Length: 192
Image (tube, rainbow, N blue to C red; front, side, top):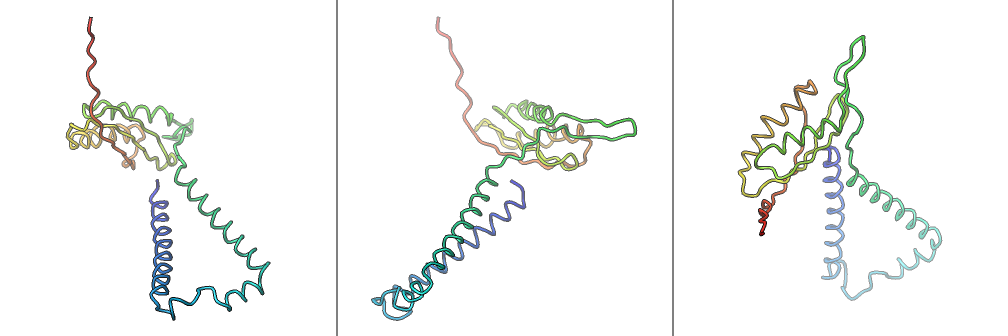
């Protein structure tokens, strides 16, 4: 997930949380008698009269607001699940005689193979996102829970990512690695 999407999530969740805390606080204060007697109904004659006077229009407004909220929630949900992995070739160099490209899938497989070559890694998968000007690599790594994490970090920073930067002829490539720890597979014994 990009930083922009993460920031949007934080602001959206903070806004929803603030609204819910305020409404909860008002409801608690009302229940404790903060706005008159706790025994008087919340929906009194004034509220009932407002809904009676604006009956068809108020329900249309409620329906429209509900649809807008539902569409915004659906858009947010789709943005969370969207994978921006690219399969287009990444252009490395342009010259008067042509240009050089590298396969995004091939680059992802090469990075995953570099990462998987570490003794601390049980399996690795990679995907490229972004444009050919600013590619990013997304790594999914399953590491041996007994292996030192420093070994995995060293392997990523000194072998796998430098190989990718050299291939793409870039000084910097942003990388996000999701590491899960698992026990190594049990050795299989053959009994004859």
